[in-house]
Image (cartoon, rainbow, N blue to C red; front, side, top):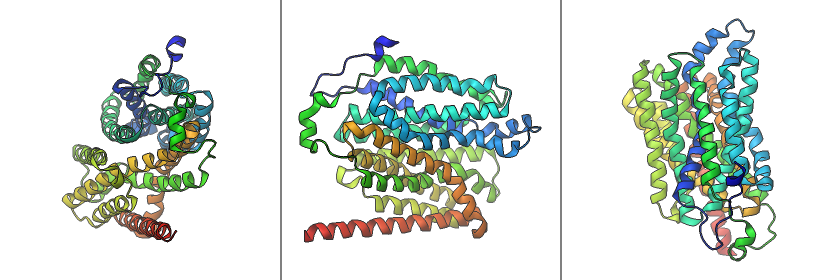
Amino acid sequence: MSAPLASPPAAPGASPAGRLPAVMLMAGSCLPVLGAVLLAPVLPRMQDHFEDVPGSEALVPVVLTVPALALALLAPFAGMIVDRLGRKRLLVIATALYAVFGTAPLWLESLHAILISRVLVGIAEAAIMTACTTLIGDYYSGELRDRYLALQTMCAAASATVFFVLGGALGAADWRAPFWLYAVGLLVAPLMARILPAPLPPAADAEAEAQAAPPQRPFPVRRMAGICLLTVFGAVVFYTVPVEMAYLLDDLGTDSTATIGAVTAVASAATVLGSVLFTRLSPDRRHRLPVLFALCAAGFVLMGLANGLPLLIAGAVLNCVGTGLLLPALVTKGMSLLQYEDRGRGMGLWTAAFFLGEFLCPLVLLAAKRPAGSLATAVALLGAATALMAVALFTASRTRAAGSARG
């Protein structure tokens, strides 16, 4: 495997990658999604298996969520390693370890040992997601980079639905069976080593870097902090529909698994549609975050007011079109702030922010549900908070524009 890892960089002045490396990076970006949804259908059966373990009622759900928490905490460190040790090498190694740690529960008998293996999965996911996003920034630029970052969102949304269905199908046989899907990392890692070119180093592209920004620019701490805070909130918005839709349907008296699956698929399709629309927008319209947050807010309000299935679905579709636009807008905005030397660190921080939002999403809605009286009202309140975010961003942009005009 060492020979492919040492593949020479592409010639200066040309894009170091074509479509096939992009396919591999999209595949790698779907792996962390696998951990987020794969086990949801088998948690009740897993709970029954470990019912004699003290604290299992709290520990079993953590098996699902702890990789996202580990990813959020460790992605910044993965970003530093990406910058220092190399994007491609770290990605290949992390993908192989992902398969090893992910399949460990197939033979582990202790619930606590399974939890440790899930933490290790989260560490591998942190490296995979950070390296994949960083390599997209290394391989591509301008319009093409934006398209592939939007495609990342599309693949994640579509794969979430597929993994949920696969997890349920495999889990019907045995609660351990879905863990076999993690073995896909052993297939993907050698393909990555073979197909992905070494990223173009800054020395080979010095002229372009000099034109784009002055050399020795310090890491943009303040601007990355701003986009990362927005991303935490945006991730809460992004995950609300996939995480809470089944509960909202149940509150409306719909408990059919077929109906829940169909509505989830429709919402995922709407997210994909939003990502497609992002690539169709002109570059100056892609980063109008106030409009995108307002669109998401409108969907939440409709969902919160829904007294029947049609209005709930309409609100979910509107919201998911918005989130399909919002996520690539946030990541491309963050990428635009970074140069080659600090791209890994910056994308590590962005990845951490996104998965922290994923982890916080159910906790935020649970905290809001008690004073609100119902989950639907809590979603409507989140819609109001999202609308306030849109207003704040719009006001800030107008203030900056007025200041620039005076200057």
